Amino acid sequence: MSGGLSAHDTYDEAITILFKGGRLPTWQRLSQEQQIDYSGQHVELMLSVAAEHGLRKLEGFKLIAAKEPWQRFWVIEFPTLAGAEEWIKAEMAPPYGTYGYYEYHLSRRFARSYFDPWVKEPQSPSTPLATPDPWDIPDLDVSHDSYVVLEFARMLPEAHEFSDQERGSSEHVQLMNEVAVEHRLMRLESYHLITPQPEWHRAYIIELPTMEGAEAWINAELVPPQAAYSTKKMYLSRKWAPEFFAGWVETEDA
Image (cartoon, rainbow, N blue to C red; front, side):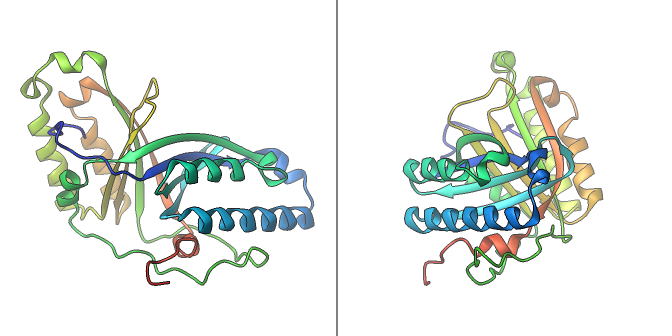
């Protein structure tokens, strides 16, 4: 995916939390009344943080095959680090936070101008429901309108010793654009970690309308020679209750 990127690609100023999360099995030990009570307290707290710190984006994805205890992936954007810090602290606060799995990574979105032209069928933002009532949470489910590939990648350290031609960068970009056209790419977002991890330093969100398209994208990412110079882990998911969580973000004209 990184073939063709240059030092001129820009990073957004906003802070984006990339969150691998899920509920621990201990959640099921609670009574239904306790689950409703803890969930209501949690949503009320998170909405207050969202309003105070200007939450810009909240989007969840549910893995088709959960990696216990990781079940969902979240993209949460704030204009400042303070907002991101408060969100993380509030999300882990008891009692609700006692029953969760949390893996957080701070990042910035990057290379919009490079990747935006790859998108062939851009989608309109989800129509938000009314601002959520913490004590009346509807039944939540995935959207069946598309498939989302979550990709976590890192160039191998020695990759920079080879030229773009040796790594097959141009051929890789051409192949991915061909897949984008044939399978009607709906979205491609890229995020760069502020603190790189041993196995990944960039995350990509790739949305396509069909399973066939998602499979084609994954297969193309693994075609050599470009694939020989990076590590990639990819997971299939669906958008998680997009209309509900779109209502957490205040619009500019609200």
